[in-house]
Length: 234
Image (cartoon, rainbow, N blue to C red; front, side, top):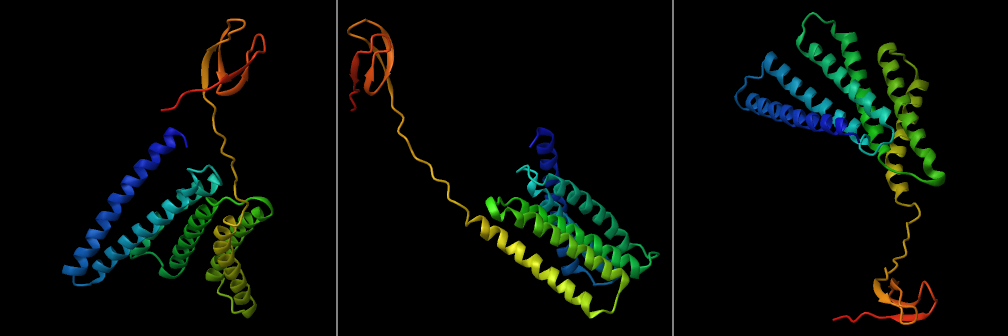
């Protein structure tokens, strides 16, 4: 990760922590001292919105550090910002038509969650024949989000669509659970530990050449005299 991205990530986390702290304190104050009117309800929904899109934004940024599927991270962060900007008018503005705008809010929230889910999954490394699971699962995740969005706006009354949604949801859950498990079944990396031989400065008794030879059996690099090098250990 470049220094610029590291700096942006640091400021993002600082702003996130501060905003979550303010939201939590506000919600606690309302729950203890508020009268649970319309304004209090809007404030609580606002704090929930901040928490929701802060978490999806953090999830979307997960793959930036590892350098894989970075496009998902950037798009997920953009959707989280847009989602927050869309939710606030939906909570506070009285002039917005509630029905279609609520559907739009739901679809943005769904896609923000999908980007966060995909980015978190992309941090898992798959190798060999199982590597196809990653793009296949990400494809299913966004197919499900798109399908749900289409159903929200079209409101079709069709049992076949419900079955298709169910199939996509099952595949989504299967891929999300199986990818971390499959990654643990990969071939174990075996490394052979080799003892590094220490070198000793030695002068050859035959040709008087000063050189560094490995401990143990060695040969003079000039006259090829066999020399046994030993160091005394205390």
